Amino acid sequence: MPTNLAIDDDLLSRAQRIGGLKTKRETVNRALQEFIDRRRQRHILRNLGTVSFREDWDYKRGRARRAPHR
Image (cartoon, rainbow, N blue to C red; front, side, top):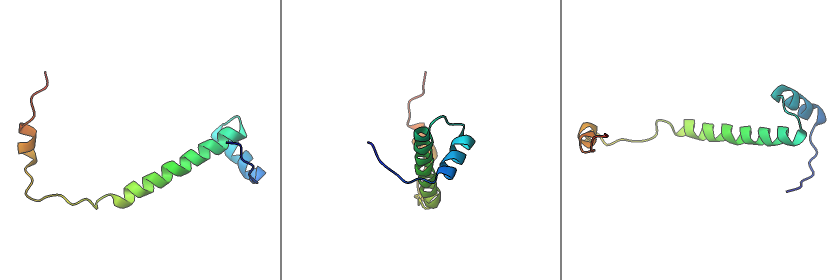
């Protein structure tokens, strides 16, 4: 999708050079992907440790029910 954006040329050039990328398009796409990835990681980390487990769950018994792999 063609889009016109007013992006700081110095910032874009620095990102392109640091990332070792060849085009502005590649640089912007990589930056957007890294932004998304970082936000997902934050979400995962924020929810880490918030899962409650059943105290009465016998995990060993659950494993014993599985058929052995051969």
